[in-house]
Image 1 (cartoon, rainbow, N blue to C red):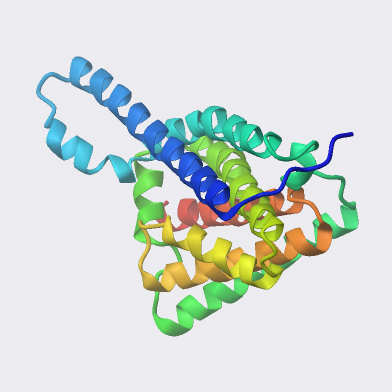
Image 2 (cartoon, rainbow, N blue to C red; image 1 turned 180 degrees about the vertical axis):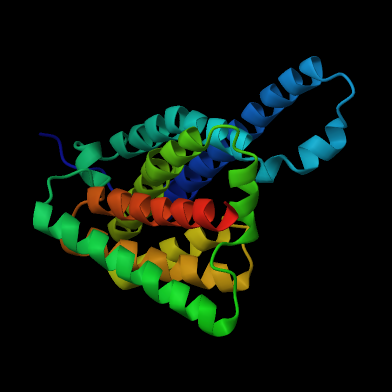
Length: 241
């Protein structure tokens, strides 16, 4: 088996930017395609207003997220394969114990409970307005649930807890520093949330990184992310109904 080639900081940076750019381009492309169909089916539609609200449209979010599964995941694998003889293993797609998976999912539920109690104590809404908006505009709540439970976790965890953590480790950066960097980057992309929610996203990112470190697999991270999103979906459905 061939040995892994050395990673350089510029290669890591360019790879991260390529994935991020592909993600954004995919989202924009899907949004424009849906906008074209909406304009054709509703000639009187205020397209400027529709586009302005598209980032909170649950239907658009669902289809765009599914599209990123087919653009970003192959790209992440390709970039890893250019330097690693076993790219999936490098990304953390490795065997894991069932007990470990259950433990980390239980810790995720505990994290959700603590965050809900903190929100109540601080007078914050249990469900962010963004979640309420995408749920109301999803057209198919089942599709939105599928995206939140599977598609989003797979894409984001393979990138943030898979590729980024491994790439930073290849540069000799200590794991805790890499974990904080990946969690911060993950929080920054959630521009739909306010500062309070961003702090929670960062904290969840650190928990996910810890799961990757201790289990040596990204699969528990995907499961944890899915459990958290399912919990948020259920809370949204209950509170808005």
